[in-house]
Amino acid sequence: MSNSASAVLSQRVQSIKESPTLAITAKAAKYKAEGRPIIGLAAGEPDFDTPQHIKDAAKAAIDAGYTKYTPVSGIPALKKAIVAKFKNENGFDYQLNEVIVGVGGKQTIFNLCLAVLNKGDEVIVPAPYWVSYADIAMVAEATPVIIECGIEQGFKLLPAQLEAAINANTKLVMFNSPSNPTGAVYSFEELKALGEVLLKHPHVLVATDDMYEHVNLTGEKFHNILNAAPGLKDRCIVLNGVSKAYSMTGWRIGYAAGPAYIIKAMEILQSQSTSNPASISQYAAEAALSGSQDCIKPMVAAFKERHKYVVDRFNAMPGLSCLMAGGAFYAFPDARGAIANLHKAGKISDTTDMALAEYLLEKFDVAVVPGSAFGAEGYFRISFATSMANLQEALDRIEKALS
Image 1 (cartoon, rainbow, N blue to C red):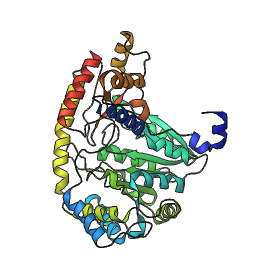
Image 2: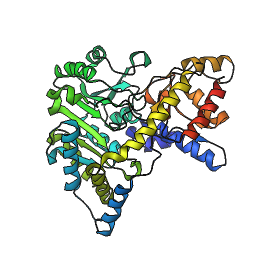
Image 3: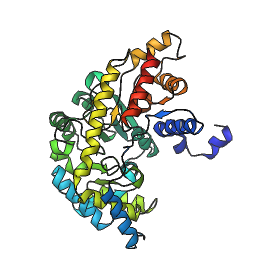
Image 4: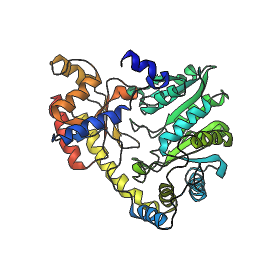
């Protein structure tokens, strides 16, 4: 950036970077438009259509004239459906004023951070982490404190690591289970142990991002930290949305529940930024949460099949090591051995995961996201939310690239 441009732009925007997943997806799309046979495994988006009954609810909302402004925090019918979802599926009791609907899960996290963080506050982010957590904390002028949780510990934060990271400046801890990018899922016992650490530090807020709750690859019961440590309820914000479970990424509906004063602060921010989420999307989301949940089953069945195929293939490739995931639709192989091999053979110029990702895209027409985008150098992420035929071809190319 030129000096004149940096003088004009805010320090806030200069402190963050473009979402790497979106940047790689855009580059892959450009190559595809130019006629290259690109297979994109970068975007975290189910490849299924939104279920028909949800689309029908949206059409009915349009025909009924529900095309006006709604309350900033969401229509009452959707907020009631969210309250019922939390009660029936998670065992949480929330009032309507403890729930907010946002323009996607990302906005609820953004609004939460702007509502509670100040300059000098620290946000504990276990790595690998979803790309936006650290940058959103920085937009709020807080400092992300990244804790490395590698493949050796199953990509999960350990209680001793959490205890060591907490200090007087710690304001917020971010949890994400099932995890994007690793698919790691915390057990009830693991969450209980982390909860015991947090209960000793009453000044620390807890955010739990459960966006992949329903993309359950093991069939074991889902728990979040509030199930394991109910004593955190007065300082815990539960974040979720309809994007992944119901294949509704473009509808842009996320939601959050937590202490009423924090939710109200998030609503005030939203009133000055986007106002309400799209009215029609809200009626669709209400149908998603209130209707039959059977529409999730065929999607999850397909993800399970692809997941096993992908992990088995990766573990058979030279220099890769990949764990089975508990949820979400990502594989996150440790590629440090493969990177070293390729560098030694003179196929990549640098020993970084970015060099590997560029090699795969430029020479083999496969788009993956380097692990460094998620705070984990030496790994890469693929999404298996694409057809088995695409996965087979892409993994054939990756295997060829590594051999």
